[in-house]
Structures are given as C-alpha cells and as structure tokens.
Image 1 (cartoon, rainbow, N blue to C red):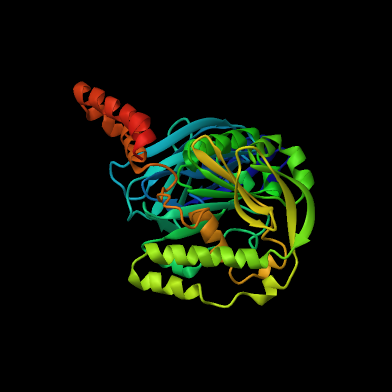
Image 2: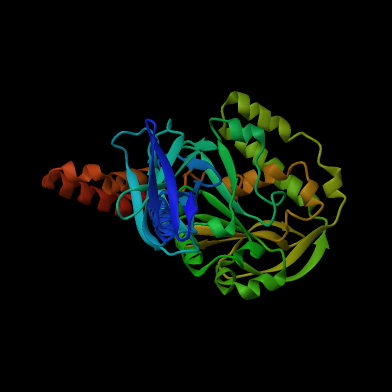
Length: 426
C-alpha cells in the first residue's frame, strides 16, 4: 500500500502484517551512496584493466649469451595517475639478477622504457616483467619467450632496413653451423636502444639512410659510442638527400655519395663471393670446408651479371680503404672509427636486380663476417667475453657478499682487463 510521500512494505510474521514506512528520498540517497562506494572500491580493481603493458625482448626476440641486450617496454595508462615500477628478470630463476626502474605515469600517457640486461646462461628461454604501483600492488604482467639464443661464439647482426626484403639475411648453412654461426635480426627505429651498453650483443649493424632519419638524439649517441667501442656499422644509401638530414652519419662515412648511376657490378660481386668461399673453406673443418669450396665452382647468377646495378659514385675520404671496386670506382669502402669500423656500400640491396639475387645472403655473410675474405679477424660477439663477465658480476647483487679485500682485487683485475689486456691481447 502506498501513500503520498511514503512507501509501505508489507512484512509477514506468521499471520500478522506490519507496514514499514520508508522515505523515497532516503532510498535515493542510499542508491547514490552505494554507487559511489562501488566506484571507489572498484577504481583500484579496474586499474590493471586500464593499463596496457607490452614487452619486447632482445633484438627482435634474439638474445645473445654472455652479453648485454635490450628489453623494451611500452606502457599505456588510461586510468588514474600513479608511480609505476617495472621489475624484469628470467622466469623461474631463483636468486637471479632482476632489474627495475620507476617513473611517473600520468593519465592518458604512453611511455617507452628500455633496460639493458645481461644473461650468462644458455638454457633460460623465458623472461617475465611486473608493473607495480607505489603500494607494491601488481598492476600488470608480461612474459616473453626468446625467438633465438645466440651462443657466445656466434655472430649477431642487426638490420635497420626500410623493409624486410632489404634486411640482412644469411644462408641456412651458416645459421646452423657450429663453427660460423651467424644470426640476423631486423630492428625498428622506435625500439632501437638508447644505451650503448644494450648494443653490446650486436657484432654488426646494418643501417639504411632512410632509417637513420628516424633515430632520436639519444639513440644516435648510443650508436656512435658503440661504433667507437668496437662495433661494425654497414651503411646503405637509399636517397642522396637522406644524408643532408643526418650530419652525424655523414661524418662517420668513409666516403661521400656524389651521384647515382648504373654499372655492371654483378661480375665483381660474384667474384668477391668466390674469393670469400675459398678463404672460408680453407679455415673451416673438413665437411663444411668442402661444401664452401664446392660453392666457388657454382655458375654465376646470369640475371645479375647481365643487368645494370644502380650504384652511387663514391668519393673516398682520406684514410679510407677500398674493399671492392669496379673499373677503379669503389663499390665498398671502409674506415676505422675509434676501435670500430664503418663500411659504405655503393649499391642498395633493396633495389633490383640485387633484391632478387640468389647469392645475396652470401654477400651479407662476407660483409658481416670479414670485409677482407683473407682476414683473420677474431669472432667477437659485440665485445669481449671477459668484459661482459666482469660487468655481470659487478652489476649483480652478489657483489655485496664479497669481502672488501676480494672486492678491491676484483676492481684491479677489471681495470687491467679493460685497459692493457683489452688493448693489446683481446
């Protein structure tokens, strides 16, 4: 029964009915209070649903052993602002090294964070990351399995190319060989590390001029420091105007592209490969050596040797070395920069007929393995193994358990390794 301004509810107790009057205004207030309480209580519960968290492991999923490598995170917050802490490490590794970083995450922002990590193990394949708020509550998690493990004696090559077709690729024989293991990873400019330590896992980096335009100042600084520390940089030029926008790259090059023309460079490239095959076959064990020696007798790719290849006319700089030339015009130039090396190609692999060249993976193998086929350059996975080992121990929490005397001895040994030992023996 309902009267004006009052609500009566019938409650039966046995055979007797009692009316319970309640105010409509009171009910409306209770509804609003309950709704507000639900919002307040559910706000924190929904925080995790309002945070998008992505993890990018290594170099396109490739993780080198006994070397530093990058782990990049993208975190987007559509909820209330909070202070985020990212903690990352190897999954299931009890007492292993975990790294963390903290930063403010306002509402409606997307942040990209990169951390350099070190992995001495060869069997761990999964890495996990956790995002926590200021109270320590878990907001988001991510886990990623590596695409490939590159062992300490292997060679990992990164490629900043405009397309997958123009990126570095290696023959299957060299990818699976335990003597000349070579792996390639295509890198994206927005995920390129901005810390030179995170580039240590790379032996060689291929950089196209069109991708150099997209690198930020911190990424450029990391790349230049990596080259000066012993990295090898191979540069291809898509457009001559690209170099005008990247003066830092123009200063590194062993030569300056003047004009774009065409030449029958296929014969010189095929000959370059045959010299490399013969040299590699003499250094490798019997089975693989015979296989490489047989390649030197394979007929040349007539589709390349009979075609005109777009080539830049290069003007060499003082101190540069011509690795490959055609009619006194350099096709590949090289120059030392610090402890590293910068190479410039007069041709662009993303253009025909090189794009369809069947031996293109072998060309990349020669350029990335050794510019001079007869060279005895030591395989170096992005740096010295001893440096990486010392860096791992210094960075780990186990350093706190070492007595002071041993700590000082370790410091002296480390200075010796990065000083005279690294300079003259490694």
